[in-house]
Image (cartoon, rainbow, N blue to C red):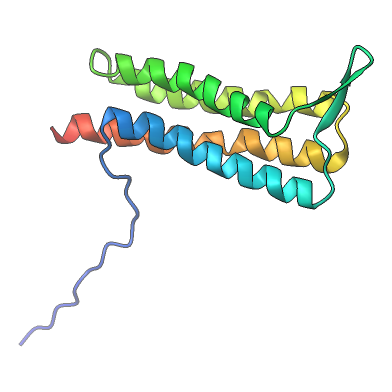
Length: 146
């Protein structure tokens, strides 16, 4: 008599996503995450103001909304439109989009935000990375599973 032990797969997988869900879901998730980061930063005393040419300008919450939605709509939107012709664009978009999100933290650090605002705004750049990766991999899976 033999006994077998059932194997359980504990790996998480990204589900297949259609184009609207991938695009607007990723943008929505990143936007919600960034607004939560902004609220936490504001509660911690961040002003989200900087001086530009002698004028004080606030970047939140309108700037957070615009700087989350517009880049993702352009970059991820282009990948969503192109992926049926070239599936490799999804990996390229994930890498380039993630690299740009991380690289642009330098602009936040070089501006004259207070420390709390600098940290919160830097985190908002990082929230784009998982949103991009999940969206592009979900699209990729949808094409592979068809």
